Length: 248
Image (cartoon, rainbow, N blue to C red; front, top):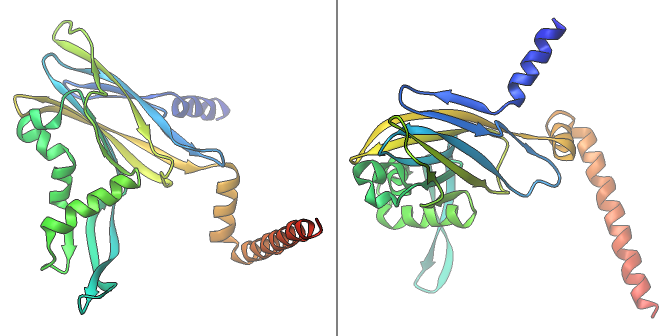
């Protein structure tokens, strides 16, 4: 039994390799640890695609619903919150890189980029102005570092025996939340997806953030006590600082 556990742990720690019929990829690390000093990381993605293909790599988070307040002018004078807009089928993260600009990859390039993603998002109320709201929504997510579309980061190597190696180091933002994510690899040729494969990546809290999250969700009373103690100590510290400044 102990040997089985050790083998399982070694397997989890190794980079994950996935094969499709015409596509091979390795993603490392398979688990992203979010600790107290976490300030973003990068995924090393390597593999092989059919010769002559361009490669699109995406890191996509789970779909969620997002509610935002729409601001507008009342009587043409005051800016106030107006309607509540509900965006559905919104990936929490969508980071895209490719071996060539997506607009040069035909229909497949358009569907795999942020514009293709926007086409799958629904907005409630149904009469909302999508042509205005969706670009603004994508811009907001991009400013947060959660959405990104680049080209040129995926490097293609020398083809051999009908296969072509590729590699990319995909930056992952510091605002990444714990959860399950998917790395998607697409081989694109003549405007169509020729092969594709996906690999799961997990983001998890470790150290102090994991302790505080467990305290907040599973031991609310102790979390409240700890928060009160920290607030009191913080107040005392600030009082001492201002007191010492006043004495000079």
